[in-house]
Image 1 (cartoon, rainbow, N blue to C red):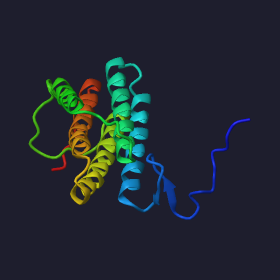
Image 2: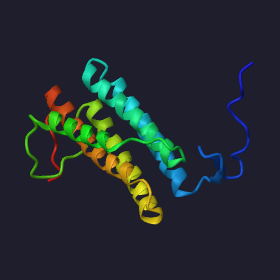
Image 3: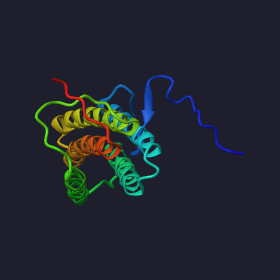
Amino acid sequence: MSDKIYTGLGDYGETSIFSGGRIKKKSPLVGACGTLDELSSFIGVCRAHCEEDYQLNSLLKEVQQDLYKVAGHVAGSDESIDENRISYIENQIDKYAGDLPGLNSFILPSGTRLAAFLHVSRAVCRRAERIISLLYENEGKFLTELKYLNRLSDLLFILSRYSNKRSGEKEEYAY
């Protein structure tokens, strides 16, 4: 017989964290973990829309694995991503941005389904970054995670543009 997924322990606005303690669900820490989970879920949707592009799908899977390490560390695990992952993301930005035209204006989040979902992922990543920034400011923790999310949002933006270009979809400008 399998364990039940529900316990009832969260019914009064608290949840367990990795370190074994319980905290309020409204805390920024829980907000950060929830937003990272949401981001990973949207990236999963992106992966479903790029099955034919093995390299991109593989990159996005690596990002999901990184996000679980980030969330685990925020929730109290000793293990986290290291600075090398930030450099890796920067290299991926450079690789995918290589053939993209320069920008003189804001672009509207649009285009292919994959590009649109990458834009949503970017926006959720920025929200996660804002929450982690608050934790860093208040507690002096999670600087590596903050840097990683900052670069990741840039990568997701570049990947949305790459997806549109690869599909022959024109970018729409805000003005």
